[in-house]
Image (cartoon, rainbow, N blue to C red; front, side):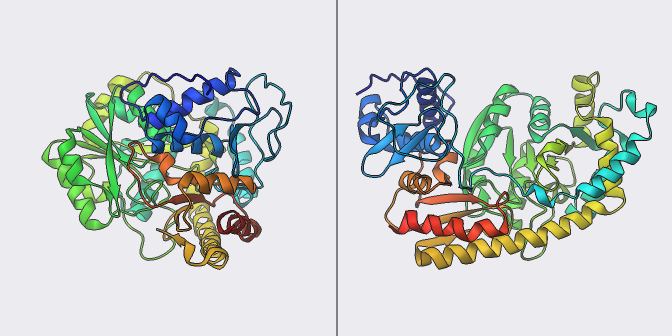
Length: 461
């Protein structure tokens, strides 16, 4: 066996550390292109880890194209210049800067959107009008973002999300990670709960801001408040509208419990209103911030899903009690978003284009959701159980065919389809029924059925 060594550090998931160690070996050519990795059982025994930990690390390497799984043979390091998934060559060439990622035929793990739905002509027209404003917008704008956009965001949140926000409470920033980092620095250190499973970047952002991330389990109703009570956390980051990656929407009783936890201990909830625009069935569920009255909840959202990632505009609503601290920390900073972009977006919202755009794409994505559920059912029958399909552009799918999550990911990859295992998002080594997460926002309507046919070929044998 290749003499791999592993020295885990505290406060980070073991599978993630193992993934990073193996990726480092691949990039340094310590694990050469075409080389077979140790079996999961052998590596687990060698490093004193659980098989689940090794399995999760291998899943991530396969999903990101650094490693390929060859049925009945094992896992191999991808060669340089791979364009699709092919068997390891007899004489692989060493990659200079690490292996290139494969071009997937269908990608259910990209987390993107369909860029063709962006209202480009309307955006161009408004952008040209804004550009004609000329010199005034070339000067530095307001620190929190220009008032026109903050006013438009506050109005939208009141009308469509039931949130309570004055323009003075709104902060505009370039991306939700930027604003999450700002929000975290407003807190006085200590432990902050993160959802398990959950979005990996959240942990890193909180840690960089001086907080200690603490994984707290997610059940069928969202973050477990009883576990949160025992955690000793001063804050909690949650995605109540559409939990990532389980897809759970937090019901009213659990929301009330979470807010009571925050009020009782003068704690803070950071609400990431992820995918709230894409509620396909039933009545829209108001933001947690609106139920709270705006005292214990910091609200975060972004236009990257509803418009386009390249827009790079996100927003945060702070409780009044935190505004003086924000001004003390960031009052001398310049806004991270171009004034031209801010004024274009505010006009886009004020003229009603944003609301019409959301209604249009919600209908389109609802149709694609229906197509995906139908195609999975037709292709895999009772072996596939789509879960939490009422909201958002991803869905977990439980697969009952005797395969492990790692085998599901690897066999799909062998057919040119990229999927992610639910276990890849876990921060602890809790096991559950084999489940994959299918993000379908970046697929066209014509992609879905052939992609599901390939998944059936991979998973039905």
